[in-house]
Each structure stands twice: as C-alpha cells, then as structure tokens.
Image 1 (cartoon, rainbow, N blue to C red):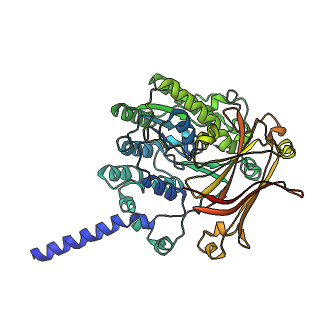
Image 2 (cartoon, rainbow, N blue to C red):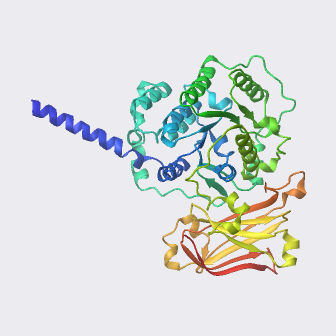
Image 3 (tube, one colour):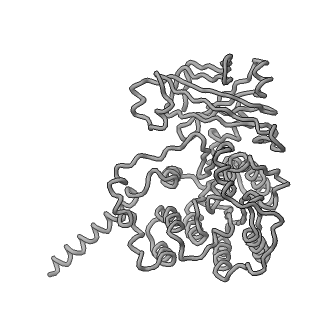
Length: 475
C-alpha cells in the first residue's frame, strides 16, 4: 500500500511539473505580449526606472529618451487593458528583482475598474499574469480576480486545451515596420489618416467638460492606490503617478471628473502626479500626435517622454548606470551619430534634393529587432518619397517570415514609403527632438550583412539615388 501511495504521489507530481513547465508552450506566440516577454527574459540588466500601466503607458513613455537624457536603464512594463491590481502584483515582483529606483505608474479610470471583469478585460489581465512565476501570491491574486471556481485556469495548458494544436504549431510574432518598439514601448511611427478616421468617426466630441459631483473615487479604488503607494514606500523606491493624454475633443465629463478626483486624492497623499491631459497647450499636442483618440503615436510620445525625463532629472537624483548601452538608442544616435560605431551618417550634397525635401542628412543603424532604421533629419522636412533596397539570395527568401517575403522580388528586398509633410496642414511642427525635425523609415533586415544597399528619393522620374553602399556589415 505504501509503495502504491508513493507511486501515486510521484505520478501526480510529474503531471503537475509537466503542467507547470509546459505552460508557455501554450501561450499565443503571435501576441505582442509574448514577443515582449521573450525580449524581457533575454535582458538581464537592472532597470533604474520602470514604467507601469496599460496601453496608455506602452504607447506614451519611450525608454530611449529617458536613457539618453538620464543615462539610466529604463523598461516599459505597460500591457493592454492592465488593471492596477495586476500592476501592483507586477511591481512587487519586479522592484527587487530589477533594482528599480523610480517607478512611473500610469493611472486613469479604466485602470481602476473593479472586479468582476468582463471576458475581454479578463483575457488582458491573463496576458500579464501568465508570465508571472507560480507562487502563493499569484494564486491568491488569481482567486481574488477570477474566483476559486476558475483556479485551474491559472495554467495555460488547461485553459487553452481547445487550442493545443494551434499553439504547438504557431508562427512567431512579426514586428511590423510601421510600429516603433523598444524595451516594452510600442506605438505607431507615423500618423495614419485612415485608422484615425475609422476610430474617430465612431466617437462623440465634447466641449467645455464639467465636473460631475456624483463621481467620486470608491473605497476600493482608494485602497488600490494606497496599496501601490505603500508598496513603493516599503521598498524605499520613488514613485510618480502620470496620466497619458487622450485627444481633448473626445474627453467626456466622466473621464474629466475622474482625472480631477485622482489628482485631488494624490495631492492629499503628497505623491507627485502629472496629468498630461492638462498640458495640451504647453506641449502643443496635435491630432497628428495620436494613433487613435486614446493613444499617442511616436510624435506625441516624443513630446511626453522629453517632458517627463526633464521632470525626473530635476526632481529625483538617479546615479548613472554602469550597464547602460546606447549604441542602438535612436536619440543618442540623433545627438551624436559620429560617436556611435554602428551608425552611418550621410550628409546630402545634392542641393536640388535638399531644397525639395528639406533633408540635411540620413542616419542609418540596425536596431535590436532585426530592422534597419533610416533616420531622415532636417530643420524643416517636406514631402518625401523614399525607397530603400538591397540584394537577397532567392534560397534565403523561403527562410524568412511571410511578411518579409512580400517585399522581395527578383533577388531584391525593396520597400518604399511616402512621408507626408503635415506641417503645411495646420499648427503641427513635425516630430522634433533637440531642435531638429526627424522621420523614421524602417525596413526589415534579419541579416548580419547586406549588399548593394540603395536609398532613392522621388516618387516619379527623375528619382535621385542619394546613398549606395556595396557592402554593409552589422555587429
């Protein structure tokens, strides 16, 4: 009987270990969160600054700007629709693990919604919780959020049992060229008129927002905020609360009031809070700074990140990191292209092209995600039609992602894009960093070396070849 009992214990222990160890095999690899966590796991450095929150966080605060201006390592933990009770658990896991000295927590009404969550909200909470190690705290959190009847769903292999076949044979996530990504930060590089119209046409516009006295923070919401404040205090870690801006035309009375209640409460708690909805005029936000009515694109993120990094520098003392690596940092490269070994700077000499486009120079470097970034820099850029290409062997094509294969024809990878000058359409001043306007043109480059790299300007004949490199190597 004893031997049988031991065998039963061993059997169920093995089953448990199998369920525990195979969990990630059954997560959706095509999901952005999987891609992000793969990168996170490969990154062993400490983060002096950590950014937490929902999609508002990951669309707004660009770690590169903080890293360039403060010389500290930064990571953006933002995840879509993440609720602050999940954020708190994530913070608790990460503060000691990554040596965090300053936490930046994005807060607004949706991050403080109370359980039970809708099915859609629940799916997004799981996208964060699935990457937390199994622990008693995680089990308690899961029980509080989803209830004891759902506890077995803490294991992806059980929760996703109907999708086992799809999960085992799924393809990896592809980072599209129109998306800007760096250490958790994720947003659209340029303003997309079609997407904006599709999103904004269904939204109602508001003017002269008013406070609604019946909207107050609940006891539950205050407790969640207090828990986060106390957590940072207990870890002797500095804290800033922030709110990313939404487009002012679509900010309704409920949202407006909730922001005021958060501001009042955090003022009483003597905790710094910056509501970027209140800085619309100061930062000169424009429709062209937005991906949709709720989220910034890269242009808007650059504005907020410069402001917040300057605020951080003046209000907190952070020692520069010995681990900081800036060779793939866009803003370091924009500041000092000649000092970055892997960056190529090309000054334009064709006066006609310079006059027509406003381009002073191109800066080319390979980012951390198998992409080649072409930075187009000038005091005032105009409409630009740009094309980049390089040779590729046909037998290599079959090994690449289908999205990359679409840009390959007759032994050549080629991509072109029209970069519109939106300054002529109103008060927008273009995407600015440290006094220069820039645009980012991104192409796939999953290679350590390419041949016959070529950049041309112009949509119609005549086009102008402004850069040609026979052999381009990357470290």
